[in-house]
Length: 93
Ligand SMILES: [Cu+2]
Image: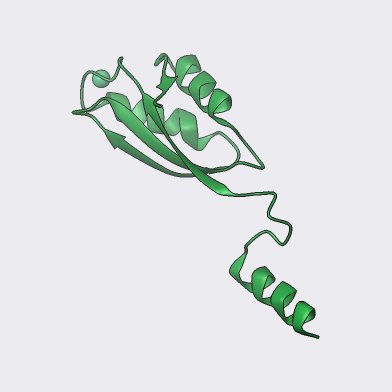
């Protein structure tokens, strides 16, 4: 009975019951973002990637921080998306 209650609670919060999917955050270095318009193009390219949740850009640091569902996408798909839009990027470690 307790177990059923827990599963139900997890379903309500949208959390994966098996722990397979998780929201992850990655920051990409995008050296080509040289003016305030660039992040808009980069953001649009990332929005098309299935599994991307939030996108925050920092033009002064030339970075884009993305939260995503790791069951749906991964950093290589994100760097590919920005590169396809004309902005090659690398994952910040
Ligand atoms: Cu620009």
